[in-house]
Image (cartoon, rainbow, N blue to C red; front, side, top):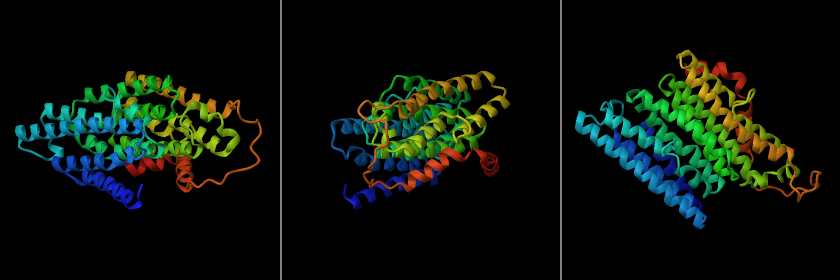
Length: 348
């Protein structure tokens, strides 16, 4: 892709998200979401592969449907109450419709069906943008809309997403689909706690972006898109394989890695709110997700591809990929748990 075109598209992605962040009017927020969607479509279709074009079409149709629902809900609210302000979404029908549309935008279950299919059709770099940056603008709106929404709906979306994210990833062999179900499960964790402790939602979102970035960049560095291709990585680059395995375990929420922090804090908050049943279901759903992360780690570190020698290859081809972003994201994805009290103090 022409670097000037790429710069314009990436600038538009930033502009769309910033517009939505800064807006207090529904029309401006909707405009930001639309700019965001339009900017990523050429990036998704740049491969000119039938699967990439199919993924782009599916993404466009789902995002356009969600945007139309948001516009309809905002108009309905303005008609009923005379208010276009985002924080004054007081009509119950409008608030429920808006939350449903935003759930469709970020891929919360049961509006998640587009997510694994779309991610499977993209390359890992565009998949990374879709799984991280594209979640920010809708999530900013969800956080603002949540206080006026039915709490039961938020709880149902959260529980269903964590369960679907866990169950869906168990049977997959494609790494991008596994990461898509991982994303759905993490979104569920963010939504479940939103009504009780919004600051925990923000912490979880930030750490999810760090850990998912690490996973995508590591797989890109290893040129792996299927579980089978992971078995050949150990003999090529043992250090990358070890850090990738630990990053995946961090996504699964194992201590003493960074990913344990948000799960621990959310379960603690749910227990404080006298919701032991919800906390138990969430913890069990996390075990489902952990199983498929462990499956990936087993394929990477404890099996060796039949086509490779047991020893480390004596020669190396110099990689042309930038490794600074991967090094930084890996460090944060593995080692932030000790500073959990400081993070909590900053967001309190």
